[in-house]
Image (cartoon, rainbow over all chains, first blue to last red; front, side, top):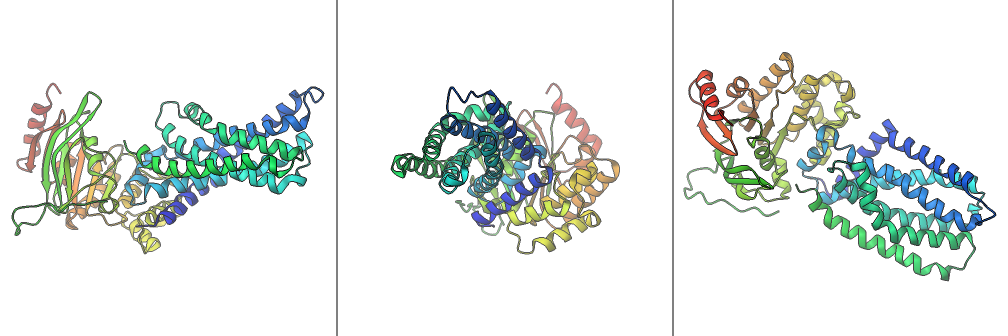
Length: 226
Length: 248
């Protein structure tokens, strides 16, 4: 039987290959991202609130909802032809299944973010290059937590009647800590504040990631038991 | 991943390939199974007939390890089935009216994917053999989305048998098949018998089920009203089935 990591890699490769061939979720998320950024850009009043104050919130709202579109498809694609039964019948461990789905989601959400970030800089005229490395680190930390929780919630939501609606309802309360932390750190980075002002928020992000990755792995096995 | 040896009491008697004892399962107030028992040796095939809602699919999903039982036990090759026992999953192959295949992958990619999940050391070679066995060798590179229902079902059989399981579970495998696809499926199931695999087949189709089985059970309201080696002809079973399911 395959090791947990081998099973995870097999499942992630399959998910990414299916998405690469159809590109449906990726294109939908990209269009959504561009539309949200465009709407915020034209709706804002720069004389009322400065771009530097408003941009971090807009960036993370965009990332969060574009990511949710992608997470929906993680287990939805296993509903067709009941392929989830095929996965559960195999000797691959449940942890391998969770990690495989999470890895595919991570690549998917990171790809959306990689396209959204330049669009964000373009629309809001933000000097990203100056803070690119620390910003990328914050995005990576927040995305790991987002995907860890999102993969679990996607597995819970998939068997409900309105899975697409249930996922955000289930997930958003759990996303408050990482999204709040990410917005706070991003705002301080854009404002050129010293590292000491963001250290506590970064610790919160790291702690959230560690706790929720472990929790989600432990819970996932029971989620799939009927 | 615990497995306990079943005490048979008679050392000369080999443990059945598949034994089910007192299987009970409820969904809320609905009692899907109410104490199901049977035992099958290697090479034996049990056809389970029953009306809709009799508990046939529940029985099969418990045997496959996809569903837990409230009470009772499933014993495979002398070892009790424990939830999450990955060794047990290697011994089971399941064919249902759902293909468990990805439409966006080719036939070869589907089988190689499952081959990797089962940890097959010779995945590509096993895939080639499996595709040839179901007559799909020349369509290996075609996406499943382009297959007819019969071809999908043949590929589903290849998927279920890819890891050479001892026990094969079939849930309404003839549903939606044309005559040619059904004939191919019959041939394959006949081959399973010759290979001494143990088969549990759940179906509405008395003719198909009786042709392919050595044992017959009639499941009504979560209970076997009849279970044993096949005796008599199809007409006799049809009459007994009609009698058993009258009012069900």
